[in-house]
Length: 155
Image 1 (cartoon, rainbow, N blue to C red):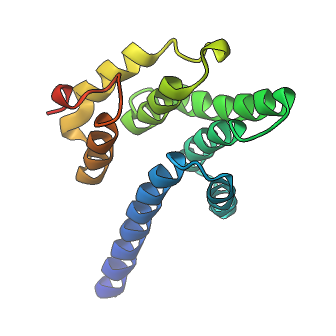
Image 2: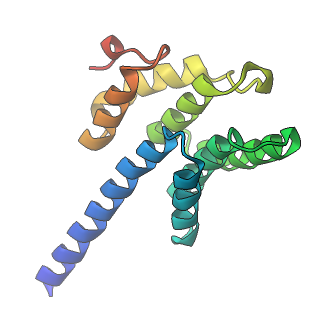
């Protein structure tokens, strides 16, 4: 029985890591099809805080591919509300703040979604050493192209 529990636990952990890695790959995509596929996949998953945060980020990213300004704004706000609600519920979650930092850094200035950049950057830097290795790698990779979260801040 213990062996079965261990195997199931390892499978669940592996699935979470694969999902996280794939999530950040898709979040950096320029393919609306891959974003739509990932949204559909996450929407099928059991409701959880991470699911809501991930969906929020993907909806915000998807907004950039829509044609009509109203549709763009509606989709962006839908994602923003999901992500911001999860950050409010989980203010010490560095991954949620990392998602927000990515989106704030790349959002058009006219959306005025940039008020937490410095706060999120400082929070991520402070928590960086306590994060799991996979998230540390993802953040380090992102820092190589970011103008906000530069590699020398992470240790």
